[in-house]
Length: 203
Ligand code: 3PG
Image 1 (tube, protein in one colour):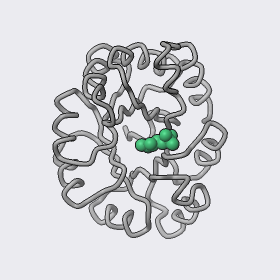
Image 2 (cartoon, rainbow, N blue to C red):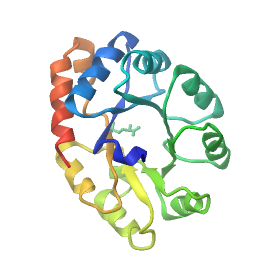
Image 3 (tube, protein in one colour):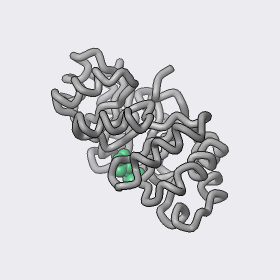
Image 4 (cartoon, rainbow, N blue to C red):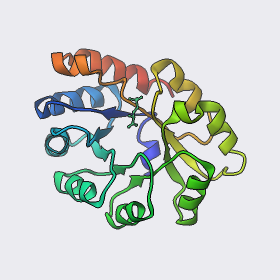
């Protein structure tokens, strides 16, 4: 099963309080989004991954913002089931490849994508999606690289996600709009579930 086929949208989560990880994950799963990317941008991220992995078996929790082999080791130790990087260096892709879990390496240009295809990788994160050219850019990539599928993230909103999902080379999209900081802080799980169910219905 490809990471890109788990759900039309992968929530990209910035979590400040590991205590909110489990109810947040349950709300996302209840809304129909079982693949959850917890970004390693906050001190709470690793603990959040560990709690979701231990307590929400219906979720597939991964680690995002992977930049170093130390990030990979810490994510695997926490129980991450997949890895996502914003961009890709040679040493990082080698380390992700050795991790034994599925991963989405980041690419934003034709040359970056081609370098990853040379390694046999045909499912990539396209980041930062809106800033790098958005839907027209991805559509153009589909000409020379029809065998590559992307998960675009970065600047995608509920009202633009469907345009991305309509492209044949987009498997799913990622975004942080499912888990607004104020909803997490307030424990407004009903709002998170509603946002998730609207996103799950996009395709
Ligand atoms: C990412 O890491 O994929 C992005 O930060 C998510 O982008 P968004 O916050 O614009 O959705």
